[in-house]
Amino acid sequence: MTFDWLKTLLGDAYTEDIDKTVATEIGKRFTAKADFEAKSTELKNAKAQLAEANKTIEGLQAADKDIEAVRKEAAEYKAKAEQAEKDAAAQLDAYKFDTWFDGLVAQNHGRDGAVIRTLAGTERMDALRKSQNRDADGKALFNDLLKNSAYAFEDQTPPPPPYAGGTGSASAAADDAAMRAAMGLPAEKK
Image (cartoon, rainbow, N blue to C red; front, side, top):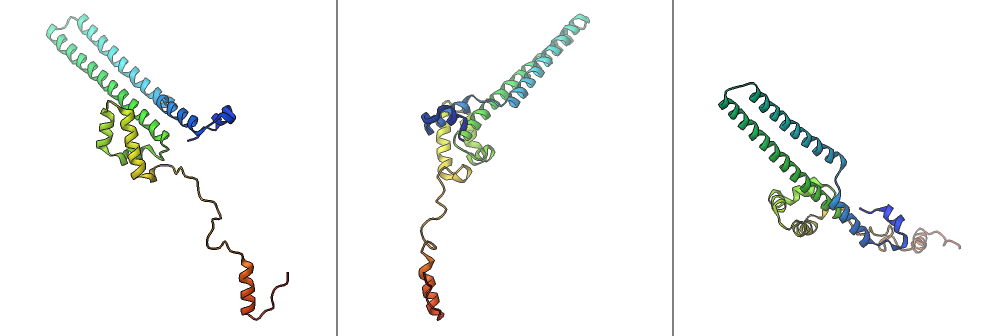
């Protein structure tokens, strides 16, 4: 992925190293707006559920219900609220990991993140997710994938020139003279 706008801004100072560094930093910090809004909505929903549970508890206490029934219902709502918080935290962790991994895919010029995840395999993805040194382990994973599954990444080598030397590069004039002589025609005048 190249940043043409970076070339425009830097002019002659632009280098491929600067491009790679900018791509790395953007990959580490980028969060898609739609993903952020989705997670924000999920968090708001969890907070709304917690507020509803608190109102229910207050309503039960005010309604002068049996103390044991109130305690039981309060414990149930508390457990539901704690589970909702755990679920939200797990979803947020998964989102952070997926965003980080998608940044690595872009940085390494991967064609498709889902294909890269499949090629890496469930075990290696789980190990990477639990890794204490994700950056180094991620780099090692992508080095292995680049070596063994290069087809999943954009080709970084320049294409060969359109008219490479070899068959068809010789002049046709020499062949014309031989064909004319074989057919009994006079040699072409220049």
